[in-house]
Image (cartoon, rainbow, N blue to C red):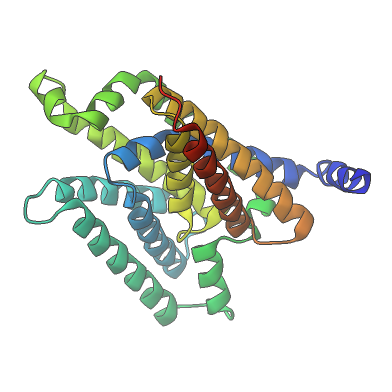
Length: 284
């Protein structure tokens, strides 16, 4: 145990490890806040759909040779989030069908473009890294950390400032509209914030594992708590704890960052599931 602590202390002296822990914590926090709302609105797979859109945007950025792909990826993902919201409200195209359409389409087009216009000698490695995460979180620059910190603070500020509105549209959107609330506007805010979170998460877990950051903390907290605020707080603590533990295990054991974090999330969910079954839920 002392040897492990000494090894961990040695790793923490390196800036790239500290950067990874900071970014991982911020992304996990943001993902968990909106995750509760998305799960309750039965729109949890919007994260999966938007992550595939982000993959397609990254492929386009690589094809045109952009050195900084984040602005393009962020813009495309936000536009897609708005389109998903509009399509989900269309009686002819339900929310789950809209997510499936955009998700599969973007993933296929992105992979097709990468194959046709690829300039890399290791295409399969690049695709695998993008889909399942890579060691890119361990090569973050100070500028990237600051960008992540600023965007994360904006996400948290929006959630706190619009907390009551988000709560209303989450539980009874029709009633919120009846009281004069602009539910469409706040749904739009949720969609844009989710898009920002997806883009931030790409370097951490990859596009195929992003939904895990959104879903597992929320579902785990719901096994123990029944109050919206309590679930949100528990989800945030759970998500941050699992992200930190996952990153540390990944660094010490040399395992993929994204997959390790998701594995820790799964283990945490099992523990919360057992605790919820034993306790019967904490009623507030």
